[in-house]
Image (tube, rainbow, N blue to C red):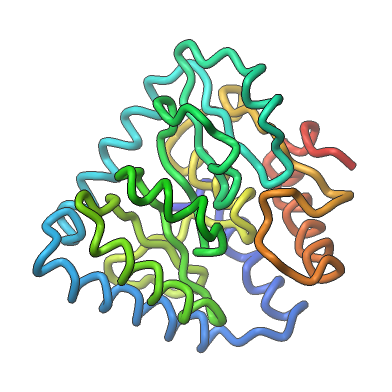
Length: 242
């Protein structure tokens, strides 16, 4: 399904693929395989059934809309910045490994991830956090490993599945965006959260965040340019360190 705040947030994904010479067929294959993998696990994990994932999405939407502010954590977040946030009436969406900056996860609504977050991601999953998990062409090994691991948790995390193809895919969503950080923002907007009620903390264009996955710094910085472009398009780039 496509549920983006604006069609341009879907269209930019094709521009990204062209820029990095990625294949839309690979994105589609990975997404369809992830849906099938979750369906196989759902025989033993009721919360992973499609009907239950839709219920999880409805409940998450309601919680985000009820919050007076939604705080999105980027990969450059520091623990001191987290501690300085007044969380009264607020909820947090963490972008992938940034969840590791949270010592208290009582206000954590969900994690948006393409499975790069490593030990921090697994820790959140083990606590039953809602995981908005993303399939793309070159992360199938990671999502297989993570989903198999999470399926063995005493309380497996609830899931919402996302993809980045221009087609409508059954049982997975495309909320728009590219990197975990800007996709988290796109998700909040798609849920109906007003732009004025979204606060970005820990977003940077000029450096690789401390919670980012192990990556080639030069390539990561290229990706951050796209992140900033997407955030600019929705009027939320003022909080990005440049």
